[in-house]
Image (tube, rainbow over all chains, first blue to last red; front, top):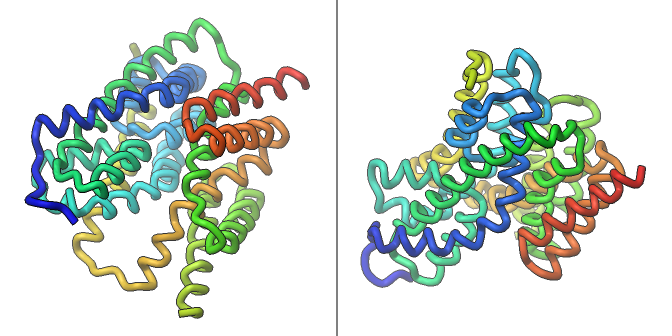
Length: 234
Length: 100
């Protein structure tokens, strides 16, 4: 599939960084809203920037910030970040033709900078025969930098605007998932698994309000249904 | 510029949990050979995970997020643009909110 060995060069990083620039347009509202949510939850600017720099996951951050309390809900926040980001578990293995050739900071740093958007682009680049694994590091770094800056901008704006919780601006976080869902539809084979996932997720969310187990419960139920059906048919 | 110890603990917990997901999947798969059944389960995870995230939020959130989601999805299918679909969806949710 790929001609020649996998490399990791500055040139690849720059190309990845360039490719990630258009993604900024999509992330501006998301990042600013996350900053506003930080401010609304009572986090200081330092705490907001620390959270975005170390977690670097908007969906998890928005979900946690929407359910923030004082003192900070340490266990609930950790569990929520884990359940919302479980999907990242599945993204790394897909890029293993690149990652298997990397060691040290190049490998673990690239994994830290992996998010849905640059993963999607990197996958396209890899499947098109791209051999420079610096691509993912460069694209991820651009997204990380702007994520931290946008959080700070949003936090500052939030202090001026005083956006109340439940404001439709926070719909932005859900909108990212809705729009990415459009690209995940593969056709008829997804019908039954998606229906099972929806039913189980809604049921668990009603039975166990205030927790996030419904996300994983729905995903496992739906995926098992699909896999069992496919195995049965094969 | 305050830094509350509980808030810091929550941030560290979230950061560790998130990195465990980012690096853990790759690490695990480089150690084991997944069976055909497991690979099949994994192929369904992305879609079912996102559906499980979105649907309960709509059911529990009512008209405002549902209107936003319908518009987001419609614009996404038409333009394939994350930016436009998010802006249009948020505008729709906002419109419903201001009409209440």
